[in-house]
Amino acid sequence: MTTEDLTVEFESFQRELKSFILRMTASVQDAEDIVQDTYLKASAKINTFRGESSLKTWIFTIASNLARDLLRSKQRWPENVTDICREEALGNREFFQEAMQIREISPQGKFEIKEHIAFCFTCVSKSLPLEQHLVLLLKDVYGFKVTEIAQIIDQTEAMVKYYLHVGRSKMIEIFDHRCALINKEGICYQCTELNGIFNPKQKAQEELIKIELVREAANKAREQLFDLRMKILQELDPFESAAAELQLHHLEHNRQVMEKYLGETR
Amino acid sequence: MQNPTSNAGKATTIRKTFSRETSVSIPIQADPAIVWALLTNAADYPRWNSTVVSLKGEIKPGGDLELKSTLDEKRVFKLKVKEFEPEKRLVWGDSMGSRVYTITKSGTGILFSMAERIAGPLFPLFAGFIPSFDASFERFAADLKKEAESIQRSKN
Image 1 (spheres, rainbow over the protein chains, first blue to last red):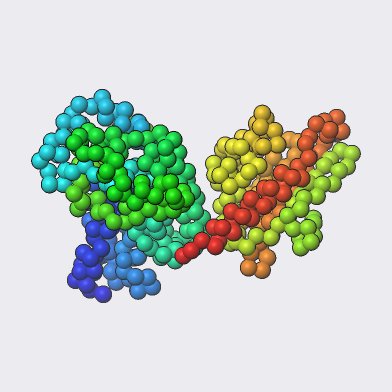
Image 2 (cartoon, each protein chain N blue to C red):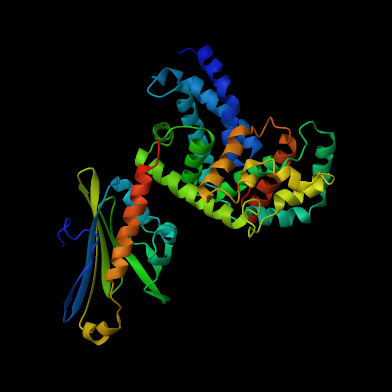
């Protein structure tokens, strides 16, 4: 394979790769850096690619290793990350002013509940142990098979299945407890709360009913509802969507809050 | 050790003057790595194991653990990991006794065994206060089997 072939192939899944790294790191800067470093490493090592896996699997392996190296030294986020960040945001006038400005002038400044569901998962899933987080994203969002994930994370298929099962179970439990969209007893209302702030003229219930996850909340089992939540992430590119700039601004706020909360510095 | 075929999943207890040993064995159609991962992830125990209320600490060589069991929810057992042989043998316990977990490859799966021996010169004085472990052991083994086989069967 030539470098030109690599470049063409890389570009075909670069968006997916960038979105994956964003969801792992919750940082636009880290996502951009890692995608670039991945390409450079792949170019330098292209002669070692023997076709034992697909090129995409090989590239995601390089990127995952770079992400893991970065994240190993950092703490995982707490499950109630969205509560902690909400409290900080309420006291941060500048955050809301910036958000309102994005809302008003940016073509990617819409607030959509569906996009916030994806954003919320990005934050909450960072409470999983790193390997479980990685495997869950690769399987349930980016569609890799167990055999491919085993190659990506250099583990046995048995361990990939273990990480996936435990990661999914943990996320299902958390969202069942927290998410008021799927559970009337849920403790988190941020999706509708923010919708009320950014779309005050909108009737929230009319918007909610358009989302299959919400529509089916009373009809489907927790595991099926989780699959519907993952479907939202599968269908959204966090960099290209109509709400991208607003959600990325929110994500950067949460990342900074977590850094301070966990006593970490960049 | 029980006959693994005829007594699969059924606990047996051997009582002596200065000791009591309960054991259970059950075949599990799963990769030993899955069974080992379940046995060594302390924080995850309450999710799959109906006999464990909480298990704090790290299951690693010499690791310190705090276990709350459904056998006596008011009590916290402070335990130490005494042996740790990946995918084969795990032993934890205190000065009064040890719980031994073993994983043995068997056909396309494994045979899981768990045994606990409580012993000592003062054993006769408190033996009457220790509840039977049989039902708890059977539930532990059944829960582990169910969870491990569910993971093994999950789609690719």
